[in-house]
Length: 511
RNA sequence: GCACCGUUCGUCUAGGGGUUAGGACGUAUCCCUUUCACGGAUAAAACACGGGUUCGAUUCCCGUACGGUGUACCA
Image (cartoon, helix red, strand yellow):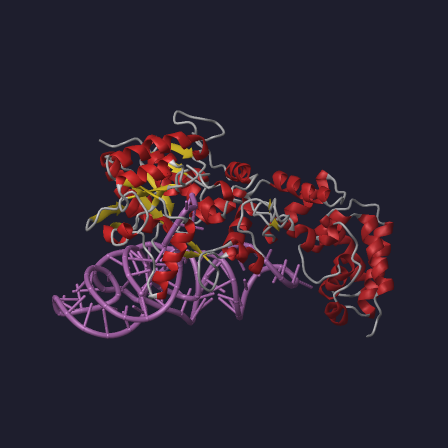
């Protein structure tokens, strides 16, 4: 009997959603949709001290921007509501009580200071402190203390935590859908805190209880959870929920572009690219973190890029729509090793999506960029520019740089091109061309312009190739770009003449 | 330190007991374009190392090295 597929993405609202988290959400979503299952979002806000206002809303907007749809969440509700762990507090207390009664958990009264001292002591001996079977009887808890004293402490309102009593000498094994069988000795696991002194559960308790209560069939999460999964398995057993335990799949991490460690927000600053889907302003420091959206990435491109970072269908297809990803996705094809983050590839995907986009839509995006900069432009002109530029850009914004001359006459001229391509002959030719343009009543299309230019040149007995670079220089200030006749047509007759005249005055003739 | 996970071109990856080890990004060259880009073509570029198993290992097993993650009353 196979359980219906129910997966969850469980971020904690401690800041903006990281790109690695976004990929985890994506894989969960693809898996859910592939199996016609349910995609759930659960907010893991059990650490009140790390709660960041706005983070939850940021997560919502990021997923929405990426078209990752949710079936159940705090924002839309669902059969397992509430979906915020802070609102489920009473449930955890109830379940931890069950563990207390069955002897799988115990009260512990060690203060943070005492624990810190114990850690220091063990560290001095060259080892790492573990609150486990070997030391638990030396600590201050319901196991080491006489029952009467425990009762007294509780009655006196002494702060306590509830710890899991990890069984000794047990072999814990589980099947990871990506990594295969994982085997760990229970002796390497310590007596983790289940319920904190503020009455909130830790991640370990909360995720097990909630996944059980929400009928989660597959836990798809980052590899950083792999070491604590044996503990979770032990918890399922202690609760007697082994038969309904979800299957686990631990995703490889996203690594720094170079050097060591996983991708962090610091890398964003260092390498100058975004690691967050949307721009984020830190409410405490006011610091601004760039986002993929604001950097000019299309959500489809970001998703395509992210999907292929750690997963591959085994074919040579590179471009995938969300529907295609859903159809092709499987956990078996997720790779095991961490993937280095390469922003170049993301750029390439964006370029591909831009090229494939309807021109009218591109024109509209260009218009928006221009409006944001108070640069006037008509719809028609934007469309023409886009048609000319779409194959040469990775971002719509590139048009403003590579095609700056569409919006403003050049103020400087590429000096190397001036030196090589600007001379007395070209200047004469351009002057004649300008005069011809003034007199020609003809339509101002690329072909007509070219004809006019050819007529002028043939009269002067000058070859087209000799003056084209100079003309381009006068119009654009550079030596490269799309078809010059097209550019001139877009700029218009009057502007073209004006630019030629300006150049003739501005550029000295040295040869 | 201990535990767990991993290791194919610079990067993302395909493959899998016998292959010219395939693709993509990036890089280089050429073609196209009197420019540049796009596009096309070509090239350089990889199975971490050492032992097994085997007729044969990049592929399977074991070590080593290296890397990653975890080791909180954080998630």
